[in-house]
Length: 330
Image (cartoon, rainbow, N blue to C red; front, side):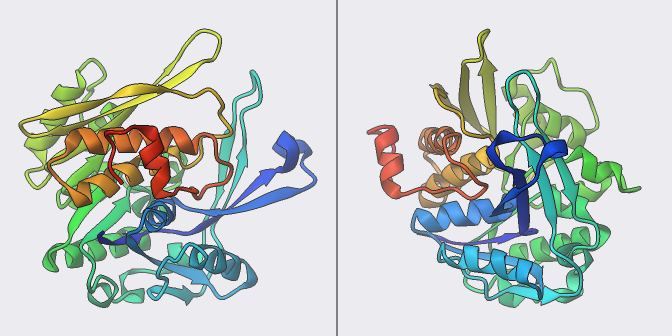
């Protein structure tokens, strides 16, 4: 198994109890999460050595997050403390015809305030073979963007492979005067694996790709980013009546593989499902980079499974992958 580091903000999610709307909520369930932390938890559950590089406040809320991640056997040696508050978000799940939504409350968080000087990238990545980041950290603040870039630079200098998950958050970027494309390009240029769809590619490439095939989108990304060797993307089909199916594909420069669609008979929530897909792809790819089909199927299997799990963090076991298909290896 691999030693994987992730860099990003650890969050607390507050969700109304029993499906009550935010405007009528009188109590909240608290969940620990964050896109990168979700991936670290999933990889740790599957047997990898996972570490989270981040900054938490020295407070009771920061302690909640630290204890929860430590319970997943995640290495938090390089998750420090700093001035600022705990990053939060409020989630209102969809209920019938009423769509759900997210309200971020992250301004002034300890992670948002911690710039590159708050970390020792070389020490944080010592012994790691892979670094996973997302487009969320640069969106949180300019300091977050600088720290992410420093971490990626250290990863490349130290021989780590790098994966980038687009995870575009329009509301975070809307609150910033910065151009998302200008901020993200220096990071994506150093990624070996990109998680994203045609919307992520359109942002990075600065042109409309809505009518292009998945293969054409991947080839455009390969042309723009010579370091990149894989593009992983998901698809979701919603039938009349509400039935949902998810599928995926992975494109290499000279090959591709698609995973059959998986039905979602019981959806608890969709939070963290994209992170579960990234977990499955990385789990298989880090063991055998040539097995594109296995990586796609493992990613979809874990993505589908996460739909039936409450909370941000996954709850996987190696046997979950086995149960998803006899041709998927643990």
